[in-house]
Amino acid sequence: MALTRRHLLSLATLSSLTPLASAPLFAASTAEEIYSQSISIDGCGGPGGRQSGSGKPLNALEISDVRESGVSAISMTIGSVGAMPPLEAFENIVMDVARWEGEISSNPDALATIRTTLDIVEAHQAQRCGLIYALQDGVSFEDDLSRLKALHHIGVRVIQPTYNRRNLLGDGCMEPADAGLSRTGSEAIVRMQEMGFLVDLSHCGRRTTADAIALASRPVAFTHTGAFALAEHPRHRTDAEMKAVADTGGVIGIYVMPYMAKGRQPTAADVIEHLEHVLKIVGEDHVSIGTDGSLSPTELTEEYKEEFRKHTRQRKELGIAAPYETEDGYLFANDLNTPRRLETLTEMLLARGHSEIRIEKILGGNLLRVFNEAW
Image: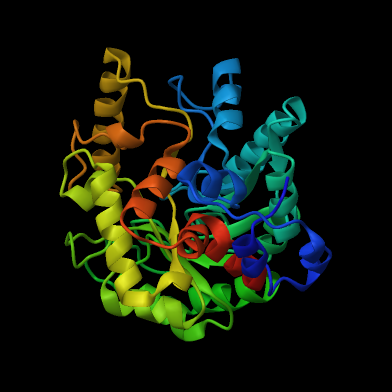
């Protein structure tokens, strides 16, 4: 598959990829061409989604959705979030990695394991979807930072120190005390960056975020968030926070969640509005997309609605829910409810006058650079 001129430019800083410099150039002009030729990375998501429940093997239709999506790589959450014994959390991560490595082995023409940025480029060229293992909570190593080495060995590459609540590393965005990083949390941030993890601050509290940015020696990220200036919410990031992350060289990824629409089901227009706000604040080199959703379309059946209501109540009971989590604020946009949702956003951005180079950066070029610098 030919690589675009803009794609090659986005890889210019990746010294290990210099052999690609002789690849043929392609002058894209339509949204379909831009999307098919660009490396596209969903900064938070995952395969599947057509069937209820978790832990089930991907079915044939879900694998078909992976192929149809055209997504080069997905940063996929593994393990659990919330308070639990650290060893239990660690075991959940190991079991999840084993499950997804099995899926990759069973579907080698559709899925690929990602450990390096070169793996992402190769997955794109082979028209496969690479899986990047990510944690949304640091509870699995909060009492023993030596487990970070094991996590890296089994393929984890992105870690959030905290989810919505407090753990021994620091405070999440739903903690009213907003106490920031603990001493152990500060040590964890330093170790994670030294070992080659991308530090993701998407769910961290304000002070925890500021503390982590102050310690950063490599880029950090908000892989899946929204703009606080457009919708005030603990999960959203202020303009100042976004600028601080951009100053580390990092990215701000916009998601597809009800919070950006103040509790109602979001639309593609909401996503574009938040993307364009972040572009205005930090510039085109620091914006990405992290849908925070499943790759396959959501089927709005009665069974799904009941499961969603049950899941929402459970999150509230556990105290990990955020404001605007409602029983009918579904976690997808009707006009993006397709495996090729990133192509739809490409078309909308192009129609609004954004350049091909900018769109390719947003689709995946910026995340590819950040992964390379972090890993």
